[in-house]
Amino acid sequence: MKSFHENPSVGLMLTFIGGMLDSYTYLRYQAFASAQTGNLVLAIIQGFDGQWASVGKKLLSTLCFFLGIFLAKYLIDLANQKKWFFWRLGVLYYEAVIFLLLTTQFFQPLHTIVIMLIAFTAAIQWISFDKINGLTYTNLFTTGNLKGMATNFYDYLKNHDPLAKKGFFHFSSVVTAFISGVVVAVFCYHLIGYQTTFIIALCFLALALSQTFFIWKFTRGANLFHKKTGNG
Image (cartoon, rainbow, N blue to C red; front, side, top):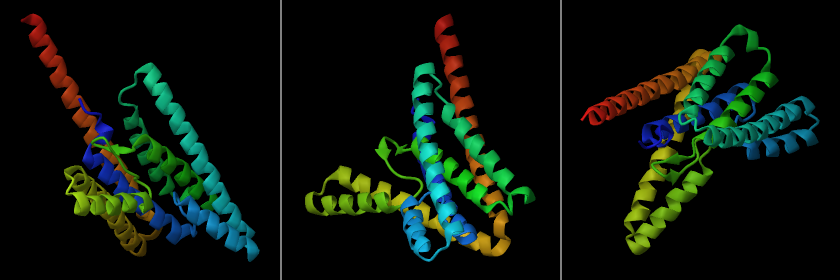
């Protein structure tokens, strides 16, 4: 069985959500959930202007993003050691729960805490889901994906390499998913404001439930097959 996290539907949905995360957090908190380069540039600019509260929010976002990466790497090693094949499902359910909680009134005045939680969660997602059908991609920001799209397009035009053509369409679909997420988040934010996090939570929950069903169906089929071959 191919690992579910490399399924195109999973990768593209997470990239769509990644676009939603950055656009939503910037619109509401003037900070990025995952684009830490942007956060650091803005923090330096705002530091020169004496906007220390904004600087602190962005630096804490970067710190939590770093910690999320660290934890995700630990989880990968632990899962490999313990042979937890479907631990990434837990990541999806965790993300759904976090964004459902962020929809509540309790978190609305806690802007710094919210951006820290989202940055931490986004980093875990980024490290845990890094391939589609064996091809690398980034589900949180689009610079690397644009590079892959352009370089593969050039290689295909120059050498007519079928692998480059495949790579071009791979990265094109990822970039399209990210931009679509940005557009949807902006539309939702202007329509329902902070409750956009509820839409994000529903996306995570739908993805987690669909992959749970997929894994259950595959496991059930595999068990039936083993019973038949064992009895035979």
